Image (cartoon, rainbow, N blue to C red; front, side):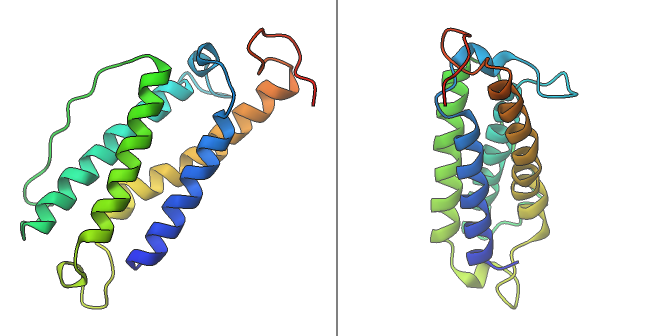
Length: 154
């Protein structure tokens, strides 16, 4: 996958994730996803950690250091849903900006991005989309997406 494909895919997945939680009250982000014990807050916290690790790895790559040889460490802590979403938005934007700044010569011969970039961030981002969209759709269909918990009129 080349940079432009990665940027396009990451942007599309990010938009779909944000759309799924748009206008939902914070307390709904603590409810478990369908058929899971993980909440949307937990999912976004994991994606944020992955984005931060990708940022650190891109910084190493920018410096000419192989990120696979020097594993970046990122400390995580559980926060309120609003803070987690905010941190994820910032981290995602930073991944995109960092990726745009790195010259093609730092990547593979054909401009292909390293596999770790796909597995570390893009693939988990892609996998999160259907989970969060299904959860959001279910929540809305049961009338539990409004700020009062009353049915949402559409």
